[in-house]
Length: 52
Image (cartoon, rainbow, N blue to C red; front, side, top):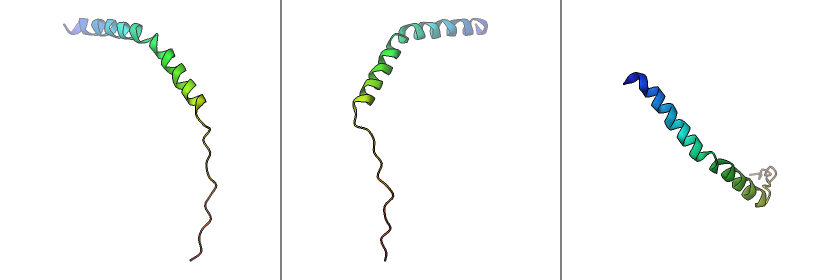
């Protein structure tokens, strides 16, 4: 039982990768497209200290 466990786990990983591999590039492309379409991030300069 213990000797076949690693073999079974390898096949499960292979099946998962085979099923998920086509969706990964699509998801990355979608995220990149959304990131490009948003307004650029702008940071404000340092705030001046108010004298007390």
